[in-house]
Structure formats: structure tokens, C-alpha cells
Length: 280
Image 1 (cartoon, one colour):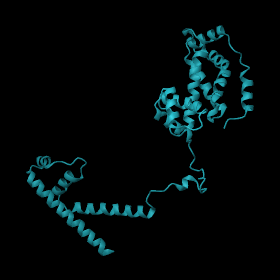
Image 2 (image 1 turned 180 degrees about the horizontal axis):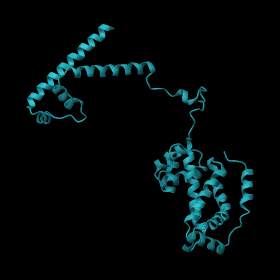
Image 3 (image 1 turned 90 degrees about the vertical axis):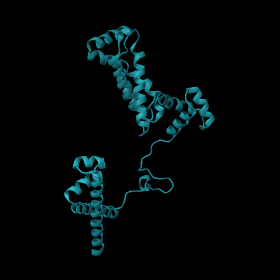
Image 4 (image 1 turned 60 degrees about the vertical axis):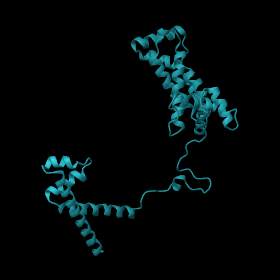
């Protein structure tokens, strides 16, 4: 929502108390700021160009942002320009500052327009601000219009179409009501998580499996537990050859011990399952 003129009028009255600097005055102040980092000189430079910030901010008033917010962001861009301005380059501060003011305002609009970042590339930034101005003379965007605008702006037709969709469809709050049934959008989002009963059953099942696995491991002797740990429980299991080298026995013997250990574990697990069913 763009604010009324009262707030802006009061601000304009305040900034008009700061005089417009002549080119000689501006150069002298810029030299002090550039060479000595004189804060008073920087303040006078910024103050003299605040009316210039308002003029540029008004050019972006059609994007639904508060005008004073745009002025504030533009003022930050002006201060950035003053801090980096080199008076010995041979041009006025206005020529240099206009770029920083516009970038600051454009960044604010892009970041405020959508929760999803829009201006990730120079072309997307260009499309965002140029497409909206060009669309004012177009009733409805279609493929032919997108082709024409693409040629005019130096962009691909699909890029024009994609940016048009992002300009047209603004973010909506989940607390807003659906026009069809009056329900809040957040109430219409399905909950794909398990209910509490299912989560409790799954937790108990995982706990039971860990208990059975621990019981099965206890049924093995020390060597068998070592082999199962190296062959099954490791993130990177060892080969029969590696284990045979560590234990000093043949690969065939390791295979036999592994099979015997697996059979012991299977019998223990089956026995535990039978007892569980019996208790039920």
C-alpha cells in the first residue's frame, strides 16, 4: 500500500532545509570525505542529494511498496555511493550516485516481492522491472506478445513467460481464506505424518528389533561376534580375505563361521518371535 502524501510532504519540507551544493562546494566536500573520511563532509553530501533520492523512489511507486520505505532504501544506496565516490574521476556525484540509489531500491523491491528470490541473474532483474512497464499496454500476455517482448528486451520467450507468471502470482498467506469454501489455506494442507498411535507402534517395534538383535548377538561366541560385526554391521564390510588375514585362518573357515553364526542368530530370533506370539 502506498502511503498518502502527508508523510512524504513532511519529509520533503525537512530535506529542503539542506541546500543544494554548487559543483565547487561538492568537489571540496568530496575531497575531504575521500582523503580524510570527514564525516561532516559526508553528511553534507548525503543531505544535499536526499531530494534526488525521493525523485528516483517515485519512479518505483507502482510496485505496491510504501514510498517512504523506498526512500529509506534509496538513502542507504546514496550513503554507499558517497562513501565510495572518487571526486578526481571528473564527474558529479549525481552521475555516480544514481546507480547505487537505483540498485538499493530495486534490491528492496525484489526481496519484498516474493519469499522466493526472483532476481538471481542480471537478466531476471532486467525482466522484472522492464516487463512490468511493458505489460501496462498489454491486456493479456500470450505467446506472441512474449515473443515480441523477448526480441525487444533481448530475452528468450520462455524467460518472458516465466517472469510474467512470477509477476502475476504474488505470495499469499496461509492464513488467508479460500474463496470457494471460506477455509484457511493452512487447514487444507494434508498432514502426511503418521498419527501418534502409529508413531508409538513403530517406536515399540524398533525397540523390540534392537532387543532381539542384541539377544541374537549374545548367543554367539567372541569369534563369531567379531566376524558378524566385520561382515554385516560395519558401514564398509570387510571381505573374507581381509578377515582371514586378521584372524589367521582360511577364507573358507571364515565363511563357515559366518554361516554358523547367522544360523544361530536366525534360531534365536525365531525363538524370540515364538515367545512373543505365545505371550500375546
